[in-house]
Length: 257
Image (cartoon, rainbow, N blue to C red; front, side, top):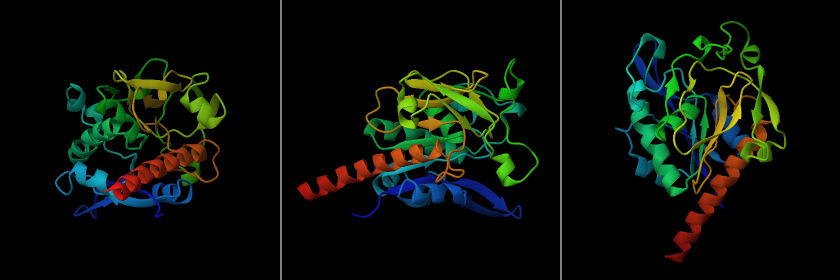
């Protein structure tokens, strides 16, 4: 049996301020390949290039990656301000309906950082433009200086609901994670279950209530050192298992024709 294919949502960048590219960090592909044991496939984040039905036929699951641009506040009924930062409207137009379609179909989705926020917005939730400006909140942003190891170091704990989805998956109710985000959940969507929080009350782990498939999302970056980290590994392993289950279901359907 061929390995399942995971569509890794890319981000749009300009090289040398002129040449447009769609790209995703190598650590995303490495985590999918090495830990999920799936085939990584970078997906251009533009609905003009492929529609969601085509993507869902090609891929067995989707990794919604982090990215510097934020979900446009118009997507959750608010006006744009300078605090909302940069945007990628093409990615919004692709990922938000893709999340809803995958949830309805039961196709596996793993949201990471911006992807975590996308899942919430896609399901009717909203975001704060800047967590660190809220009373009592810590600065969750990536440190501006230092090595890559220092930027991705474990910086705070996340506590999961007792006997909840993440507690059972991790085998621990409290874990340590990195943190590299500016925005965060304001209002959770009606079906979004917040299953883990940072010490300052910031939502860090969610899933979708009643979804027929894998819909886990985390605010941190588990792709960093995924093969060795005791929090990242079970998350990507479970994602891979869900993709294999989905792929097997499709093969059975083809054999029945």
